[in-house]
Amino acid sequence: MAGAARTRRNAPPREEVLAVAMDMIAERGLEKLTMAALGREVGMSSGHLLYYFHSKDELLLRTLEWSEGRLGAERGRLLTRNAPARERLAAYVDLYVPDGHRDPHWTLWLEVWNRSQNADDDARARQAAIEGAWHRDLVALIAEGVSRGEFREVDADRFATRVRALLDGFSIHVAIGLRGTDRGQVLAHVGEFIAETLLVPGAAGAASP
Figure 1: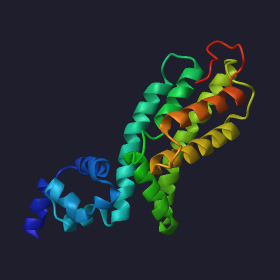
Figure 2 (figure 1 turned 90 degrees about the horizontal axis):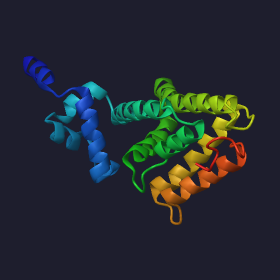
Figure 3 (figure 1 turned 135 degrees about the vertical axis):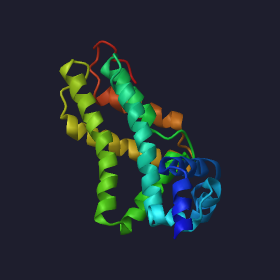
Figure 4 (figure 1 turned 30 degrees about the vertical axis):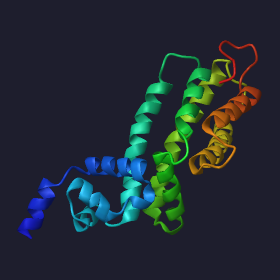
């Protein structure tokens, strides 16, 4: 027991473990992320990793929450800039859409979504909290654009729901490498949709995102 306690004291912080897990997904793919392989990377046994995370499902969800925390900080920085709402909406879309096939963050999201079919209420609530943060930021941005006359008079919550559904659908296609769908095409499609349905023609900065 004393030896195990010393090992835990000398173990890397959980955040470092999550960062390494994310790096492994990026470099080797999710299928190579096992407790044993992660343990070798961070100098811990798979048993000690299970002590911290209890299951691979929990490890994946914690890694997603850590990755989303970093994205959330970047999203906050982009959305609080002194810039037209249109430009900040374009930045939101750019941050949302995967970089390409096997984007590690989206690879992780897809796996967590898949495992959520058997997840408990706590795990589902944590996933909903992540998605809720993206949704609230988008609703606030749309409402601001409407109040400034940049965007049409739309129900911000309903419009945000539709935009995120569009982004999710396209993003899955990009992340899985669906033939004929790449990041550039997706950004163009979403930009056209926003220009046609949200932007006020002639308003300041109302060019397509």
